[in-house]
Length: 162
Image (cartoon, rainbow, N blue to C red):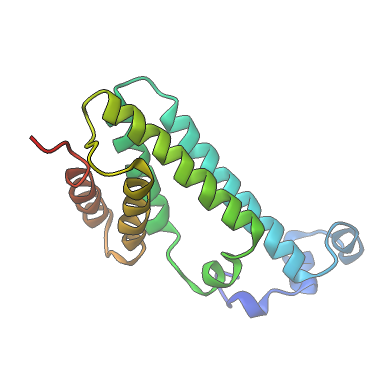
């Protein structure tokens, strides 16, 4: 897929390049689309697991939020909106993952607001949406340094007004 594009993925090619017999492959996946969907779902689950592990670390709510946003921005940068991502990044599992991520960030933002580290004049739901949309731009940035600057700017918008 990375070499030839999404439409080049066939069951024959996957079987050949993975060393798995076609019959075995068909035993688990009815077609290439199902195989790609399963692969993509696993990618999403891995990303959420990575973010959850980062959130579970010790530190203040603001420190944990910064670490999660940094990781999300890097993931977005490493997996930009390419043809495969755009075509696969739809469906129920993606919507569930997006809802989970929004709720996940809302909880962190709420904790931060209660600790006085995050602004409380904007609802956490709106701040979470702001964060995700702002950091999705990381997929179009030329370097990780640019991604880090984007995270810094995003975090500045979350600080309490004094």
